[in-house]
Image (tube, rainbow, N blue to C red; front, side, top):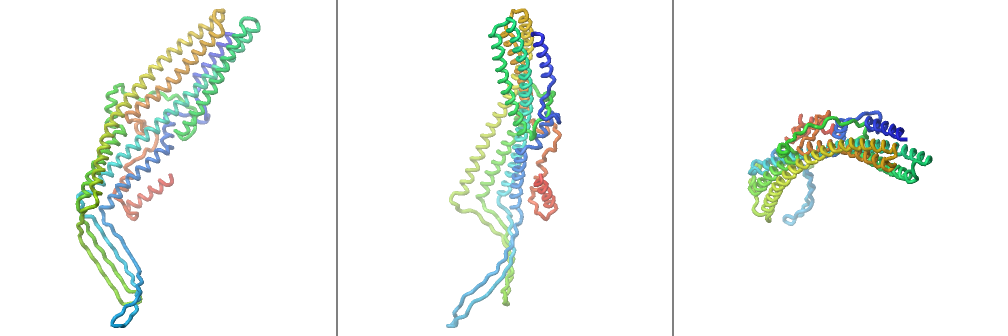
Length: 469
């Protein structure tokens, strides 16, 4: 009985070590391939790219205010009535048509529009950092999904192997009971442990199914044969140095810095709004009486100086509001800085703990395997009971499960460190993807091109391509 039991154990262990997670046998998957798919299929990234393009257009909207504004107007007017002159009543009936062009141009507003434009540019830079932060979230979720499918798949393989061993143990216990070597209690203990193993396998299979669904959501497709992720990403062991890198380059830090700059410029724009502005105004018009001989032609051009006198406190309130929002952004800068530093420290602490746990689990597996073999041999000689063998096997199972989980945790923790310092992007990971160039669209729209211009025609092609995507 014991030799057969050991044979099953060795076969199952070899199968577990050599197995890979198979949910789609037609395709092998690597972590890099999963990250590439997650990047290419992420709706969240697409959403934030569109929001970035909308922020780009804010710059174009304000830039248009510094250009001449040309409008046309046309009207047809029917006039009717009567007039009385010297006792003579005369009917009034005429139909007049006119068409006109007007031109307005902002000449000077103490920099208000310029400040608003610069604030919009800072908002664009902030939105770019939001996109980079979202990219990190998408890729880290894919790492977690990949490792969890591997983790739960190995749990299932481990428990299936354990179930085979317990079935063999139960058959052996029943055979020994028939010849009087063990009692009915030993058989019941083996039956109870087998039932518990079936329950554990069902739970592991359920966890694997959920992990696969998370993989679908994070990566955009179901997993293939998930290969071991290979070497860990290169990380510096200098936590303080990593914190310096994070403060200088983490997207959350850069985002809030641009938000502060935008808020400062908004305050300046609010102050300039309280000052006068100078505008050029011009108009030409032609009018003619239909079925008549009257014809009028008119034109005007002038410079207008206007400014606020009293608006019920509106401008003062707008300035105070801008100052309050600026102060809020400055406060948020301190909050985000401390949060980024804490995240780096936490990520390194998690990585160190995961590494320590993996080393301990490796030792635990070695010790539990030796103990299991010893108990099994002692059971041959009658010095150990069936329950002792089952307990030793359960301890080995738990140790192997801990090692599987620790291996996955180490990889997740390593990529968490990359995310905490702002280096978990497609560019940093050198993924085989076509990265998004935020400057391309901005350069096309920043000058507010009209559709008939060469730049406008080029922009129209880009928009049609985006609609197809």
